[in-house]
Amino acid sequence: MNVVWGASSHVGMLRQQNEDAFVAETNVFVVADGMGGHNAGEVASALAIKGMRDAAQNGFSSAESVVAAINAANAEIHRASGGPTDQRGMGTTLTAVVPLPATDVEPQRMVVANVGDSRVYLLRGGEFKQVSADHSYVQELLTEGYISAAEARVHPRRNIVTRALGIEGNVNADSWVLPMMVGDRYVLCSDGLVDEVEDEHIAQLLRETPNPQVAADRLVAAANENGGRDNVTVVVVDVVADAVVTPAAPQQPDAPRGKKRMLLVAAAAVIIVIGASIGAVGWYARGGYFVGFDGEGDDATLVVFKGVPQQVLWFSPTVHLDSGVKRSEVFPALALDIDENPTYSSPARAEAYVNSIRGVVEEQREGAGS
Image (cartoon, rainbow, N blue to C red; front, top):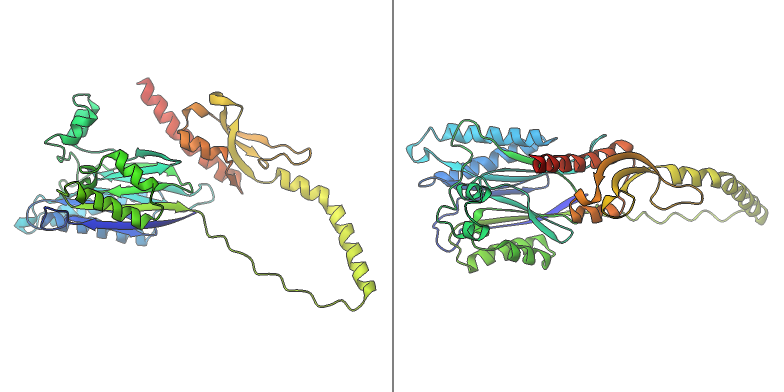
């Protein structure tokens, strides 16, 4: 799988300078929303972006490596804030999406990390949801049930963040690891978008705009049309299938020297094909692994099968690993993707994919039980 993207940033309709910053490159996507007097916010967000871009040069291998890069950027901003007077107290939000390459034991995954109230959304299978969690005063009120979601959108203190890079020597970044799936669309944005455009309208624009650059431009334009009271930055990242490489047409063999030779070659080929067919069918039917649901309805369990999804002759796939996760516990759009029976060349990669889903489900179970 690969990623394609589009990015757009605008000062807005009321501000004099743009304190947002972003990076959108193959292996790292980040949006930072700076804060502080004078030019301090612009400095903080620029330092955050530089830190993440520099870390990406060495490659990210895990969620921990992404969080380590965020911690390093925080330390650099905190040091810089002790310099010139106009930079004291500067800080920035940061939200990131980082594709992780496949390994011998893990499939391709996507890391989402966040500090502050800049957001990451995911559009998967037509379903739109916020992945990141806001670190803000209003979010705490909303979580505790003191205000409603509608009240949160217009609360006078909605822009007060409870975490930011640069304010203290240490920062606590949240991170999530998600399966990387063809068709996923991630959106990173500063609060200049979400304060002006409701989630339903964001989702609508994303669904009707296939091109990621056009989608990013349209979202920024919508924020400005609705008032543009803050800087607004949007990065749209699409997960797409690897390009299909069409093999070159095989070279035609030289003309045979005689009819007899053609018959001998043909006869030998037939014998070889007949002799190998049974073994080849068995190898094909039992080779490889795929993920699917075993059973019917909501109680069907998520498993790794050995074999191929379709029965071949008398060969049927068998259960290699039962995760214990029921279909009803899986994100609906993800369940539809699993119905397509994604295949893997090794059991380790198939197991890693299933275990990543099981980890999320177990966290949900623990949360429901607490």
